Length: 361
Image (cartoon, rainbow, N blue to C red; front, side, top):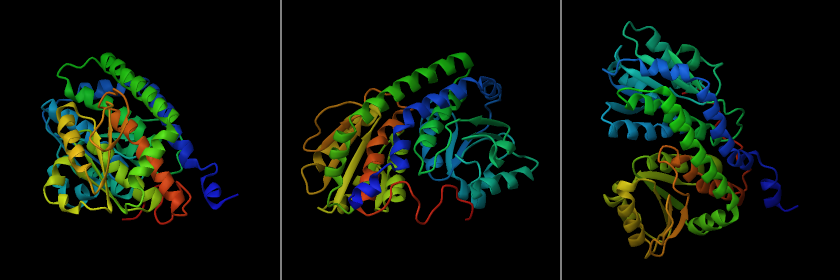
């Protein structure tokens, strides 16, 4: 057996990539069974600010609801949990709704933040989203949602997708002045059905998707992934996954920021990916991608709709609702990360330096 075959054979990471459609469906079924908790959120006064927080992939997932809530006029912010713990907790008070996302519910920054807040007389109302509820975060929250994704051993795939399902429901409740929770549950169900079906279709074309992504990244030591709005979730998560799985250099930026200085990075060593999930900026991003596709950098576009983008390669995920589209758009980058890991002599999904749960700052 070749070294490549040995590294690729039966790896758990590929299994977990393929498990995402069912993970989203499990998360939805769990959500439907927790509708009473959505009712609790719907009844909460909306006078204060909504603050969302997490670390790593959990933090990245929060770009979606923060974008949706800001569009609805809600006062919403996204703060890294470590920054919130050490520098910004004074901005929280009894009127604040703090939404904390953590797959394990045990990340060190999250645990310490909850401990600190518990000692305050003006403690915010805490909403937890975790995979399972036997953890300090779920135990210390006012309302806790279990994504019920199940065991995940490698870097976040299924748990990331599951957290987006729960965040879809939470954001829908917060965004509506008069919330009918049954309508929210039905709407999330439709989102999940579309996203899971699109993910299955993309996974069925795995060989083609891998070939496109490998051509994009081959012989390019520096990878940049660009996104706007909800696509910032995919951009940040893609860069994190490539680093974590393959040990390769990858960075995420807001697409508009790339013209403001980083454009000077363009040379043959660079590969640029555009994640275009927003109707409002799709034409802008595709025009920018077409411009860069003339060279010398390598360019790929991952978006909801098919269509040529100059000389750039493209992958279409289908007309998925933007609330869950970031989960589907992650699949090409997850598959690429696996290929890059094998190419670098790493076993996909196995941690060399980090760990599944971070328990030390």
